[in-house]
Length: 95
Image 1 (cartoon, rainbow, N blue to C red):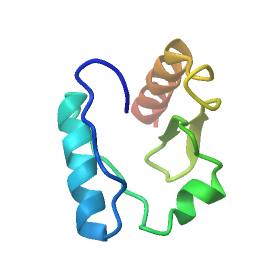
Image 2 (cartoon, one colour):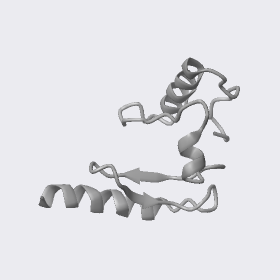
Image 3 (cartoon, rainbow, N blue to C red):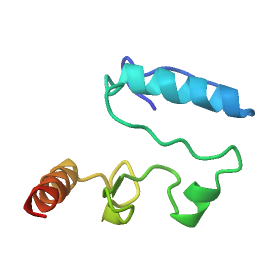
Image 4 (cartoon, rainbow, N blue to C red):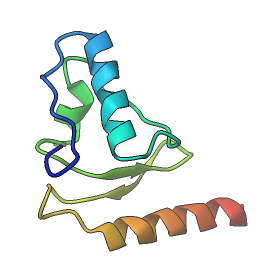
């Protein structure tokens, strides 16, 4: 994370450090109330989904990718993610 108010962190080398960094970032973004999934220290999921440098994904309750954003920061389309969240929540209600 970069920008005003963003935490400055060292690259974690252990699982515990990675959890601490994720917790710190979630607190800085004020999203502690949202479930957060943390990749293993080998970044296997990040590599599989080409998530570096940054990407936004929405995983539906069925475990499938409901939204896959472009590489950030220029690929971030908050309005598209917002629409995908609404669509996913609406889909859940209709079932």
